[in-house]
Length: 225
Ligand SMILES: Nc1ncnc2c1ncn2[C@@H]1O[C@H](COP(=O)(O)OP(=O)(O)OP(=O)(O)O)[C@@H](O)[C@H]1O
Ligand SMILES: [Mg+2]
Image (cartoon, rainbow, N blue to C red):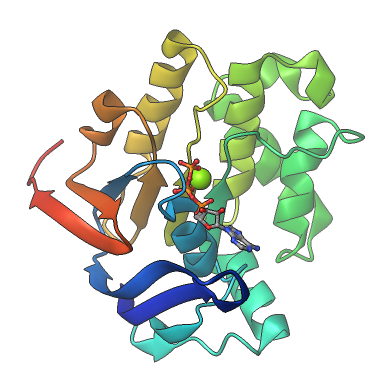
């Protein structure tokens, strides 16, 4: 589903070679974890796959189509429809309620406001936040905020779900809850890729990848979670 071909990322002005000719194919229906030392390029790789950053060399193909990183408008539209992103800090819009944060994401691809509202409420209720719809981010706990961020990431049913240390700022109990939710989001048309420093969570993936010295190594594929 996502194919990296000789994908490289350099900061040539600083003589830094972060990603070095990575070749790897992420398949739909699978969950991948990426571990690796700090500064090794996990976020860089996720940002390229979410079309936010661009590679210095090489290709990114999604569903056999080569991404043109110069076509920003097309890529932004593609991201809104097909890519859900969850960050360490949930990045919720602080002046908007939990419901509005999800709704805004839905309205980027849905013209029918009523339907968007119904869908947004439904997804928040499903994740256990029925009583938090009108809460602003500063009125939510860390775990609740991250659950809103998950709803926002999946409200448009993306086939690609990327998470960059999604529980980095949560305690172990909440982190476990969030990972349980994340794993449940697996479906046959979707690829889920997350970066983490937590080996326990990394092991919950079908495929465990290690990013080291600019390359993906040590992949051991498992059939079941
Ligand atoms: N704009 C930039 N200019 C130069 N170097 C950069 C720039 N952005 C990131 N880097 C460098 O790229 C490297 C990879 O960063 P990245 O954030 O991808 O690491 P990471 O694996 O996600 O680390 P962590 O586990 O700490 O989140 C770092 O050494 C960082 O200093
Ligand atoms: Mg990072």
